[in-house]
Amino acid sequence: MRSWTMVLIMMLAFGAGTALADPPNRAPQNEERERENPRVTLEEPGVLRMEFIDYVRPLQPSKGKSDKGYMVFAGWPETPISYVVNPTNPQGLSEEFIETAVAAAAGTWDAATPKRLFSNWYGIDYTARSGVYDGMNTLSFGDLQSPWVIAEAITWVDTSIMAVAECDIVFNTESVWGDATADGSSVMDLQNIATHEIGHGLGLADIYSSRWSYVTMYGYAGYGEANKRSLERPDITGLRVAQ
Image (cartoon, rainbow, N blue to C red; front, side, top):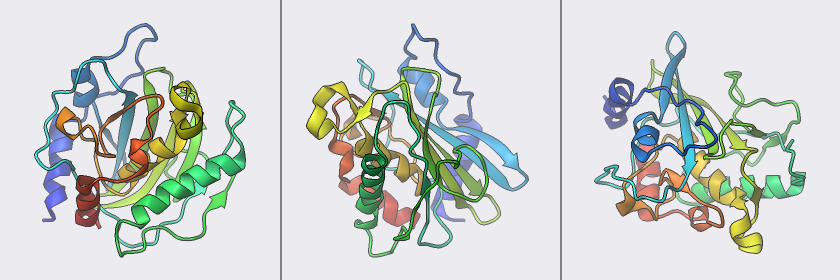
């Protein structure tokens, strides 16, 4: 049994709560967020749907624990992986800006391992939908019904081989998106968040201990943050374990 199989079993047993949309006037407590993340449901026989919901950084530091600074729940059975981007958004972000940010995020993970993770081909598809188990790895924008939610990665796992079968990513349109290196604290940095969400698609779970708040897979982020654009040693170690 691969090491992450037991991690997935533990998620099913203890972490498969219902991550409901937060009331607009109340930020969820750290314990609520972390206990209910990821939400794990059965998509179809033999396929689990895992929803990783990533939140705005809380005022109080997290009490979550991780001794290694990474947590792996699955890996891909084969690579390279292809993906499509639906750049439709209500904020006027250009197709070029979105495409560049996503490609840079994927390239950051690719550069961290000698294994080729992503195909050089990726598509722009204005009809592609995230959250649908359809054989396409889709990144898109959507309303996630809470200003406290930044983005969501939906990862499907084939339990017959304990491997990722598909991953979709949704960037919350209730966040203000842009390039934090140019626009500062007024925006949520798209490349920064895309790098973190793609990590979920590669089989890495969120880390909540404030001890590891500097790693890319730390489960919280904030406006103006860009440090997740690059990977730290625990992120790279987790990637190599997963692959």
